[in-house]
Image (cartoon, helix red, strand yellow):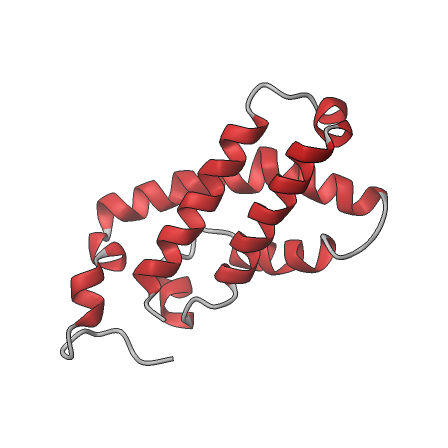
Length: 128
């Protein structure tokens, strides 16, 4: 799968989380079954897709907390307060930081987000 596509999915899911949680306090968020379940779904998408990025892409985008995303995927599968805290952390810290860094990398390394360059045979991207 192309890294440009994966990065787009991460960005779209992250923006969905920002939109869904905008203006919510922690308790209000945790008590909202619909919002919470959709945020869980979107955060799991980001976590799953982050794990599918090539090591090269992760190295080139070292400021993104890829290890944090791997841990988030595991933490959300645990029941109880720890999963609630992890979800709130993702919504209010990990997601905003990821979106910020994706925007920086899109500006400074646009080739990472370019579908056409990642499909050319002479592309530097190695098959996964």
